[in-house]
Figure 1 (tube, rainbow, N blue to C red):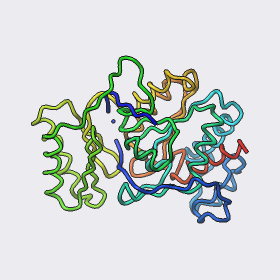
Figure 2: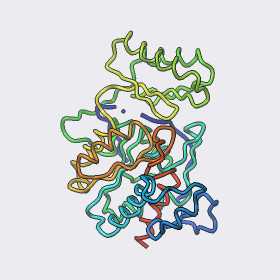
Figure 3: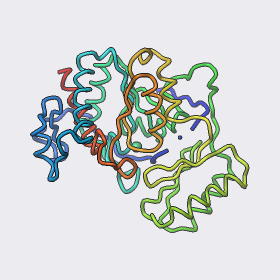
Figure 4: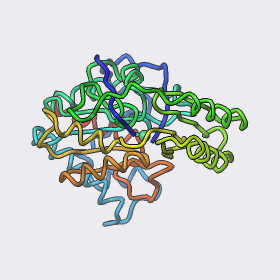
Length: 315
Ligand SMILES: [Mg+2]
């Protein structure tokens, strides 16, 4: 898979080494939390019976959940009318203590590819991870944008010049100094983006944020910070998951379709805005960032079930 970069920016997590077999498995072999509950056929009563405190009739939570179930039906009936974009961490896979420790459930690779086939190819991964990591976790052959709109699996349109650039050395050295001063902070150098994870050191968040902002100001770099779930990323200004979506939407087979973006973090909001502007949907997954209780998906597990349901439509 050729890899391209263009000028870029926006937030989220790391890298990893786990891979999945990609084999389709019967549900009897799955752990309880990976069994698929078909959302297309789920009645209100079924939904409520799973929760100790079921949403009230007509509550936002109930209506959002019904909306994504009916959206799956719309997609299944009219697949050429939709394009699906999805984040990776916290959306397709559960957040792990360390980004490299996320686990890709065995059926996920297959389901994603079936849905991609259903949509005639109009499915893309839009993530803060590098494309190399996307390939490692989900396998080759999927369209993707990595590093928050900096990398693409295709050559971006004219006007978006490839950006080979790693972060300037003085910036990397400065971030290393900040991270070293606070035990528990973890630096992840993704090339153009430097991420600092503070999941193991939540009390350091304030110091970290101030330190990174001071560093960027002192070095007078055209960089910004973006906060995500237990991570602050230092990245060049200009690109985001929103600009990534715009790039895809100019291309076949994405162009002219109604975009659906699914994500769990602040950086995904840029892409939600673009999707909604184009007459589509921004679907939130609950977590540390989205936590009002009315998210269409309460957990990455429900996103996987949604994809499985769509994938089943292909069978
Ligand atoms: Mg995420």
